[in-house]
Image (cartoon, rainbow, N blue to C red):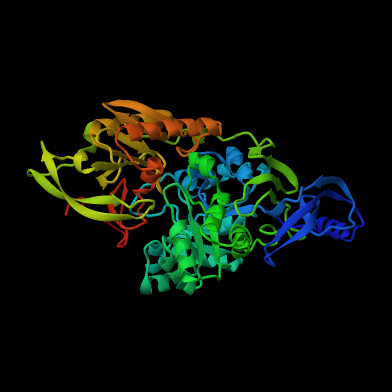
Length: 585
């Protein structure tokens, strides 16, 4: 990442005009994210880096007419789990680069929970050949909830210290409050390890307020991407924590935060940035990526340059990589978006490290081919969950009062309630008529055969079941259904595919999407993945469901670190108390 002495000398000589530039993009309106101004300019590039944006008498091997378009820095996704896109990093290029995203700051905790250090290395194997920067937020909690879940892999303190020193690493990845508030030394030492080498620590302060939030900030966490509205975001900013405004598939926070901010008259935005966290490929195709968030912000009343700063320089400064990305300035990588309009930004051309990589919404370079080890295609080893009886919850009497996880619209947080459920032949039944389904997590690493079972409300199914091997953060198989037979059918399908998404009814699997790479991703072309995802989403709707992204929702509903209830293979988790509880009152 850092220029060598000879590379630096060459850049300086180019700046002095002693050697010709590789490329000069003339006739542009340069968006300067440092001054906040838009000025006529010509962008000079050598060896993939910017020499100047105001070239006048520079010579160049190649000259391109910018056509008077606006030139702005490539966009940065400040926090993402690439695995959650279901698409491998190589093929993800087709989705994000044409939308102007040239840097992804990714926490690989999903593949790490499946396969530990080797999984992280496999995911990043082609990172240096991608047409976008892939920076690393080093996973801090693998497993996420030790003692409360079973995972396939782990990253201990020594692993984290090692990865933090990799050149791609920019921060310690998100650390949830339980690790800090309970003074757990392993995690506090990870914070120390990051700060010792000058790297920040990412936060995950979902649901925390008052003294707990203050104590969490004292733990050394630099930001939060879990805010759902402006008052919550403001409390983080007041404590010196930056805020990543999130807009994923199931976590839609942007409008509530920015509408509140604009109504409040809040204008100090250097510590605000954008992230997707988890967004399915069909939503990226339909909406866009970080450019979608920039355009939504502008439509809500934010000045265009401010929105662009939030998508570029703010994130670069926060992660201490502003010498590399985030602006159109000397010695930075020449990651450039050319667009006709700033009121609604549609990238017409995208440059990455000075190379023309996308035009008119299409990638025009070839990303590296998938080359993953064979073992990563063989990570699903189910020992229980293939049979309907595996999901039975025994109880006495005619009815029980059970805890129910209630979905919260457009968020990954959930509420909790209690409901009386019938007991038939000694087993507790779901109640689809009241939108209460059975929810189960099936251990899929062949370690113990655990199955945790509870209940969930909000999927809308009157019959059938849906399941996923993408289940944060343990990534066991999670399945919700109106009956045990369909739940078992989904599990069998996922085992056969070695990971993926499935939906069934009447004992028959009606649709599926194979995700055999770690049970998380597919190497198939993006359009095929999107077509399969659309098909199973349509089947879900035909069975009575109404959620916009049901498979993203189910991947989060069991999360044992987001209030209020979670579900793992060990059972129901009270998230705020960080302990297992009975599924019944």
